[in-house]
Length: 287
Image (tube, rainbow, N blue to C red; front, side, top):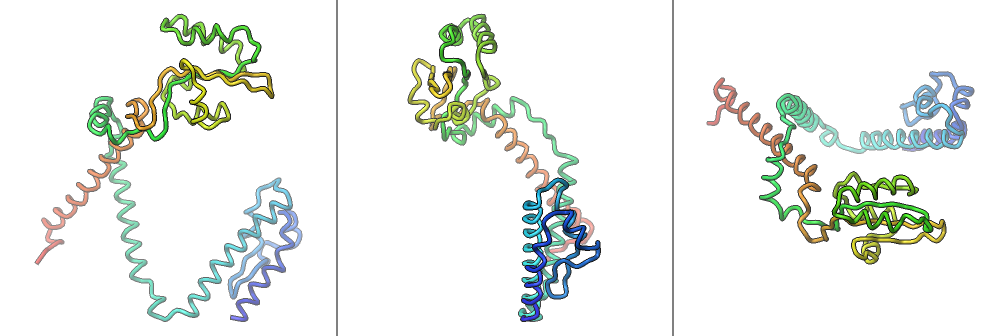
């Protein structure tokens, strides 16, 4: 154990040289040992590849030190375990075989499923799942359809934009969007999709609860006094926390669920088919 500790100490003396790739190259040949733990050695070529070109000396040193410490810790554990565990405790043959079988099973399942899995999900399938599992899609936080713009507080078109943005006439909405694109420093409609209110709150730099507390007649308008700007959001549609989420918001999750169900069915059927085939061939017998 003393010899092992002494070997580890050697690492500490080697660390100051790792100031950069250039420092590594200037002090060592490719095969030169730069750190040692017991009989295990680390060479310059082992660590040189860790440091990208252009990395500062300080960052180079940090990267190499982290690698050496991790490398040394793994070997110290292994050496101590080798020395202190009994022969029976060190016998990992059974565990290795179980791991090998599990890995082979996983790899074959992946290939089998990837060759057969249909990832196309129809709208009818999504609607059917949504209708029968609505209570699984409850909003934890509000979701909104919204438009956001950041514009000069003294802009003469703010009220015109707001009036037309809230109109039921599509031409008025198009006109509002056109004005917003032209005069606003930033304008986004979030792709006309349902989005978590936290995304909108980030645009205002506020938490969503205080933000919603300032909503009046579907609008939120907050002046940014530091920059002479005003942030405006129009809430086109709103689903409160505790309510059932709209299907449009749930579609990606439902698609993933349906594909997962198909995957599970494929794997289950594969296992059953393999067992039946083994029985038919006399490879699997229950006495």
